[in-house]
Length: 215
Ligand code: 1PZ
Image 1 (cartoon, helix red, strand yellow):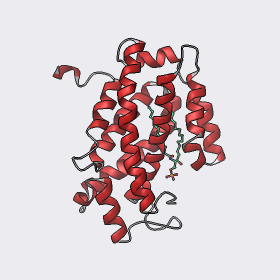
Image 2 (cartoon, rainbow, N blue to C red; image 1 turned 30 degrees about the vertical axis):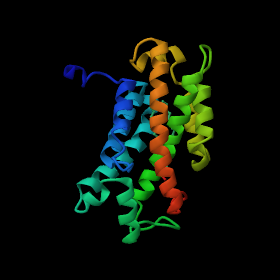
Image 3 (cartoon, protein in one colour; image 1 turned 180 degrees about the horizontal axis):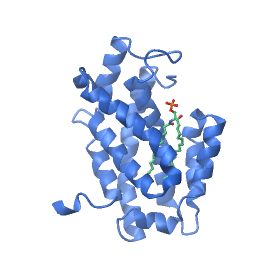
C-alpha cells in the first residue's frame, strides 16, 4: 500500500529501483540509477557513522550526476548511453589524466559502476552464505575482487577496518526488512541478477568505448 512507501529501508526498494533502471531498449536511466544509490546510501547510513565516510563519497558522486541532469544539457544525461556519446563527442572527458573534467559523468559513473560490482559480489555471497559465515569476511572478499583494485593503500586500510564493524549476518538479514531469512534469500535471488544486468550493460558500453580506466 502507498503508506508503506516512505518506511525504513527494505531490500525490496533496491529491487524496485534497479528494476526501473533499464529502458525498453536496455539503456540505463541515470535518474533511476542515482535513485538506486540513494536507497543503498540510506541503508549504509543506518548501519552506523563508521560507514559515513564511504557513503559521503557515494553521495558526492550522486550529486555530480544530479547536477548534470539539472544542467543546461540535462537531456543528454538521460541514459548512461546518451551521456557517454555526448561527453565523448564534445571532448568533455579527461581520458589520460585528471584535468578540466574531473566531474565528467563518464568518470563519475565509472566509480559507481565499480562499487556496483562490489555490491553484486557481496549480495551474491550473502545469498549463498550459511549461518555462521561472517559478513566482514564476505564484504572484504567482495571488496578485494572489485573496488580495492582501484583504491590506494590508505583507503583500502580504512575500508577493511570499517568492514569489521558490520553487523552479523542475522542482524544484516533483519535490517534488510524483508521477513524471514528464507524470504531474504529469495529476494536476493531476484535482486542479484537485476543488479548484474545493469552492471553488465554498463561494463560492455564502457569496455567498447575504452572508458574502463578513466582517471
Ligand atoms: C554495507 C557495507 C558497506 C561497504 C561498502 C564497500 C565500499 C568501500 C569503499 C570505501 C572507499 C570510500 C572512500 C572514497 C573513495 C574514492 O576515492 C573512490 C574513487 O573516487 P575518486 O577519488 O576517483 O573520485 N570512490 C569510489 O570508489 C566510490 C565508492 C562508493 C562506495 C559506495 C558503496 C555503497 C554501498 C552500499 C551498500 C549497501
